[in-house]
Amino acid sequence: MEGARTVAGAAYRWLAGAYAVCVVVQFFLAGAGAFGEKVGVALEDQTSWDPHRAFGFVALGFGSLLLLLVCLVWWPERIWLLGTFLLALLAFVVQPVLAAAADDSRWVGALHGAVAAAILALSAWLALRAWGRDLRRPA
Image (cartoon, rainbow, N blue to C red; front, side, top):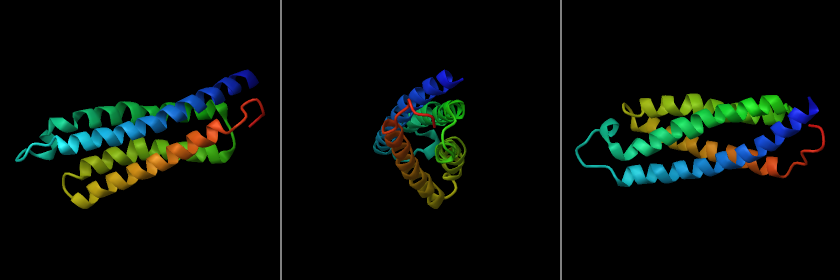
């Protein structure tokens, strides 16, 4: 079992780093969507936002669940589990709800951006911490 935990720890390291990079790409896609909007077209009908929507759902939503699954196999200290669970909760549950509710309120839409900043900070913290860890020592 220790070998599986070591492999899961190494996988977590790479996935956490890739996830943080994907969050930065998602910010880029949001900017591209905002600057590609057409005047007079409703927000939900704007095709310029399609890459942001799709990438966020697949890479960040399901990516956070994959990261949580790998973390559960690795089973490090509780702070890792808590941080990774919070990341999955924010990315897979909270962000889609805020994005859908933003059609009715721009203030809710602003929370979507604020939570995205929290996801960026949390994913960068987890990745930096994972890369600074010696995976040969027990968790």
